[in-house]
Length: 192
Image 1 (cartoon, rainbow, N blue to C red):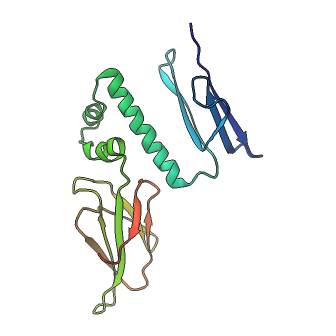
Image 2: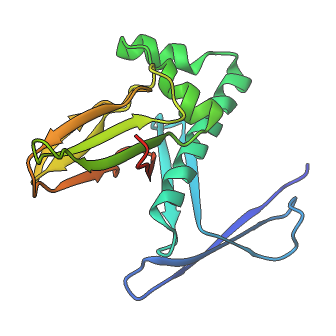
């Protein structure tokens, strides 16, 4: 019988936060430890019928890279499940939730595209009010991720589409786009 070994080594700071992560595998091309910025390890405990997980990333890994890593990991798991079982993971999720999430799976799992929201701030010379204009530049109308914004500290949800939408606010109003809960790119586009 042949055995293969996967080795992980995590360098921690004084507060036990990962600074560096190294790995190698006996069947890998590299003979030494290679640096990685993150890893996910999931083990199925058949006795307790639950998953044991370790998700680690180094403290210098950018947040956008963390989000992309998680999207790629989830997409890879969905594809592995479909390949191994011939079951359709998407249909299972849609059945269990009672909603159609095809738009989500198409973008994040199978195309692995980063939705891009174009936006601009303009001032209306007649009313003096400011206008936030926004739209998806690379997604169709069926892409439904809501985006949280803060208008003078008050949370509000917008629903970008493929056509330009706008939100008019009084002069001096502060608007902040909160993308902590959605993996998207924001691009200021003064041509909207």
